[in-house]
Length: 97
Image (cartoon, rainbow, N blue to C red; front, top):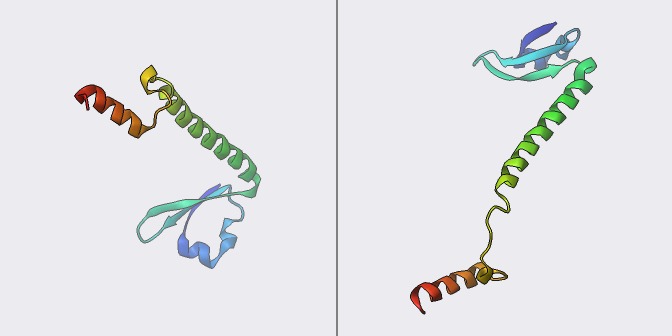
C-alpha cells in the first residue's frame, strides 16, 4: 500500500508511516514532491538497488573519460617538458625567438 502525506502531517505524527510499503512526501502548499519513505521490510533491497545504480552511473562516467584518455600522443620534442617550456619551444620554432 502507498500513501501521499504532507510535510506538516509527517512532522506531527510519524505513526502515519506504519502499515504502508512506501509513503510519498509532498508539500501540500506548493504540491512539490519532497521525497519517499520506504518500509523497513524493503529498506535493504532498496539500498542495494541504489548502490548498484550509483555504481553504474560512476562506471559510465569513468568509461566516458577513459574513452578520451590516452588518445593524444605527445610529440617526441615535447616529452618531459612543462607547459611553460612547451610554450617557449613553440614560440622559438614559430617565431625564431
